[in-house]
Image 1 (cartoon, rainbow, N blue to C red):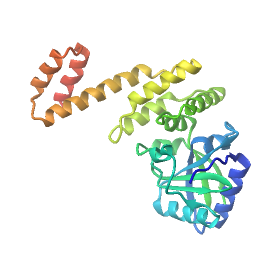
Image 2: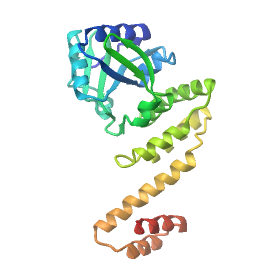
Image 3: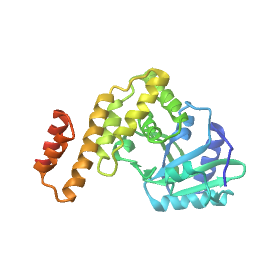
Image 4: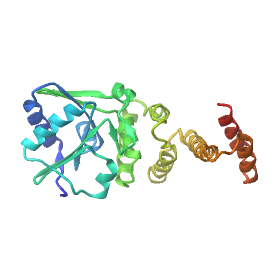
Length: 259
């Protein structure tokens, strides 16, 4: 089931009110993506409502209310939605879709404590407490996709932040570091922010940092594979030296052996 309906801000608010008034207990949701941008007055319409829950029970209760309002669970969706790894995908013939996530999006980024702290309270609607994640974190979620239009949204988010202060690039670094155990996205972010510069001449001040982190991640994975094959640290170092790796790369490799 696919859906080409678009949500105006007022329609989104009306449906959230309807759900909030039906809920039997307090439920907190975190809006990401285009719907959050719409409520921030940064986007006129959105195709989908992307919501992250910190409780599976809350997600299921919310899902039941959507089903009561005429939504249906969607089994067959476009590849892009499969990529997003939604916990529940709901569609309606006359409304925009809802994509519900439990903690993690794209099978990659997790709604972290830092993101929750940076999120801003939008409103209470009945038993529904609505939070919008920060412009920086929306940008991060959009940067991990492959969709070309997300670069345009990142530009809007950065521009909006610069009107009121500064876009906090350190928040993106913080997430790369705090989420490093389950994912390594520095290389992908580097490429996406290159696209941002090519199209809008906005240069992310963390490009050098991202590149170095990406190289370190690649080297670490290559090192790990060789260790698992039974090679000793010194043998690995010699192998990489023969393959023409730089002194800086070898220094990074040598650091792995000292951990």
